[in-house]
Length: 298
Image (cartoon, rainbow, N blue to C red; front, top):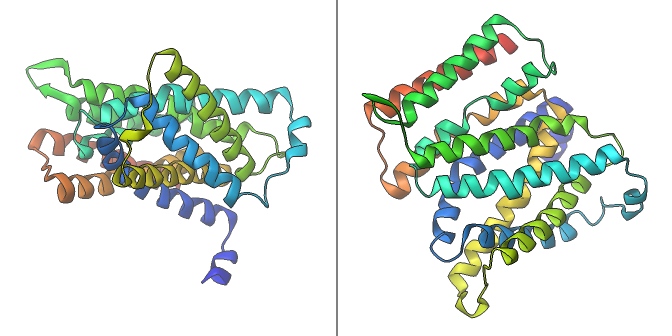
């Protein structure tokens, strides 16, 4: 099986990495909901980051070359820090807070908003066309319908959905900016640097905000979930770097929209969340936009 995988093109490998990432996105809300019962948001993030960081030193030990730290350009350092801040200090706290307020299916649908594709078009990373713009606007309309609680009041948007939407802008930056790195660092090195910097920054921020960690309150069940959360964290960052290094932002964004299907299935089987007509309509508009965008890309 591994021989067959090695024969695949780099673009195909990148696409497969993002498909796996879509599955992870679809179920990560289950982890955050459980941890939210025991830890403040920043605390659960830096605990997961700590575990992911340790795993990274083990898994990436043969791919990490410390000497490169002295050869990195100012641009590479800026990208590492800015992508880390956008991911762990801005996007992740907003996403965790929102995921604990909204249905998992709603989270998946809003995450499906093609913000990475939109930014790549605006910044000239991909060719801008009228059809692409219209499809992006259609997806925005789907998110609006999905998030509105009362159709008679279009500004009555659920707070959970709103926080997820804002976090999407920061995640989008993390995604499309991967291609701005120089060729000095490999995907494993970029991932590990982001995890180390992320742990330090979030831990300091959490301590500054007065969050205190009581290790005696952590039992085996909580520790198990934290470890799973750490595994998901390192997989998330590595697959993002790996995938968006090999495929275009628009194509990668559309692959990640498969999260919609997985989030709905997880929400239904674990929490019995059933979508109503309004949410289904908004979701359909987003899915139509995704399908049509893929057709344009092809």
